[in-house]
Image (tube, rainbow, N blue to C red; front, side, top):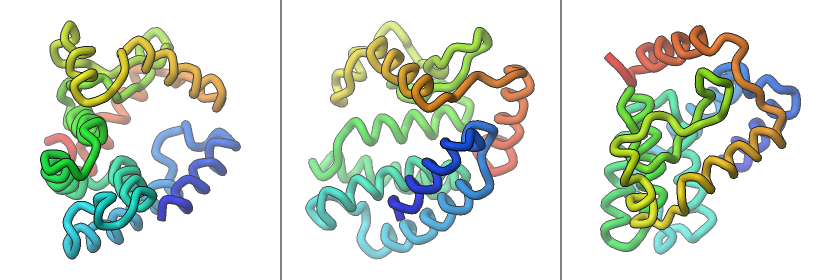
Length: 187
């Protein structure tokens, strides 16, 4: 499942279409993977390394992260992942990243600064952060490095991939909000 996800992402990034909204082909892969992984979660619980091996455990987490049009699936997966982390069966940083993803789609500030988007000045920046003065302490507690290093790394990746800010930032923000409402992230 993850192999197909990454293959499609690479193809769409190469031609630039990955960066123009949520590409229908990418969404189809993400939705299909979410359905398959939901069945695994139902029968197995969180597929941690102890149960499925390191590669499959990491793939499961990435599949959940990418299932952005499936709010209920991501929320349920977060609960299972949090329990697995409490039991020492999942990395705390994975919980942090999924929690941030869910919070930002819900329109709430993230806690760990792991989710990025273009800002009004055309820079890739972290989405709003709850209590930004303490973000590096929270990041340290879950095994993430300093936020300034994460910002530089993310900006380097988008430069290398050729991603550019939206031509009309305000319009893009309205589209994201409408999409979040359409798929059920926001009321």
